[in-house]
Length: 178
Length: 178
Image 1 (spheres, rainbow over the protein chains, first blue to last red):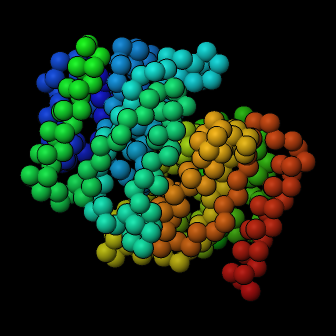
Image 2 (image 1 turned 45 degrees about the vertical axis):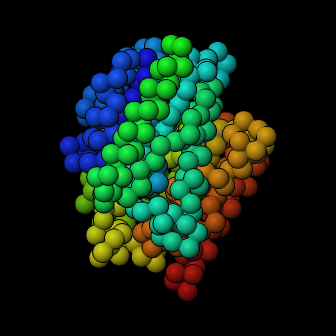
């Protein structure tokens, strides 16, 4: 099963994430777990989340970038669901060997992510906290899928990224079942 | 005024952060704003937070590192308090020119933050999301104060860091009022 842990506090306003989700949600073995729908009060059901994760071969963290990092509810999910002794540390092998794919979007153009531009670094400089969270849990980090300038992205470019997302998941399924 | 925005979900269990706070809380013009005490339900009073920030010349973000980044409630605080048009973007100049000091702690030893060690990077590789949040708001980033191995740090080393923290704030006050 491919589990999409989706964290968007304003899903209905998101053009990019709706297009991305719509491109993959009908695939066999894909489950979308929308954290802001499920836990509007930040009251995460840890057992239910761990049970979902246990069934997944690929875990996707899909969300917009806010302040250079995941939205607060996904951050809380990391803190309460990825428990020591379950996800990491002694005996913490529940996620070992699963794939982890980061699907994210930025409001700014990719050009704003440069040493001499607004964000001071290439976008990759902001990935270590997310990537190392996956790696510390023994997950296998996949090349991320990043939509830049999500507020202004044109329909054709977005459709191409959505199609690419679908292909990535189809390939994962083919490999898992092949 | 020096505003310490403090985010620790388990303050009473924290040796390091209690020592750090105890070293500075009696200084004149220091105000400690403990987010997890104030907002246990993640229901942040944005106007009150902005009013506090408006009075500060130095804003301190003090918290333990969880999953290579600030705790979820501080992340939420970034998202809801640092509003576009107030903290950044067109007309967003409320924090312009204020200092920003990051005071944080890690559970691991500093040696675990190396390319060939558990966390895969020097600790500085995890600072861009926090630092660029400050910079995007026009705040002046100060050299961070980082306590590594907070679970095991010895009393003498911790006392030295707490004293250093106090000195940093005294110097800030002296400069501001000098």
